[in-house]
Image 1 (cartoon, one colour):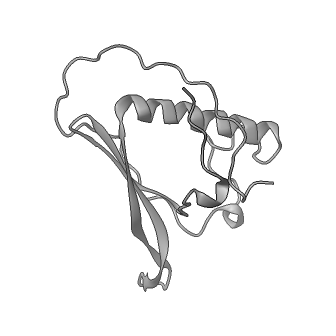
Image 2: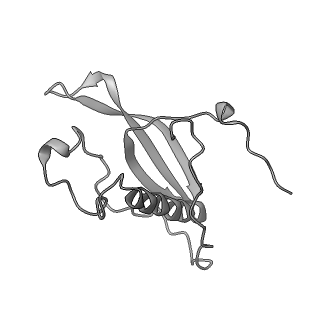
Length: 136
């Protein structure tokens, strides 16, 4: 049985400037998304990050998402939107760097042991063309 997705105008969208934090506990990966605040500023007048939403995924779902994100990065490189290797090397010119840095700095550490692995995650094929009206 196939479930047809709703029309694009019925799918809610969320904007985020980036990932604030990623945590792992009780077998679930939690990803906090942030946007820059229009009201809260640091001592230099720069906007501070404000957590807007949290995505909670199973570990297999998170691993499948990594595969999908990598597929999108490769397609953006192939289309010339990103220079090759842009994701793995920092910007060489300060003017090209964003005004903020993602607060995620440390490697992810599990909050508690989750027991032995049940085997490798099922590979996922790269996602199709984005369905958002923001993409032409």
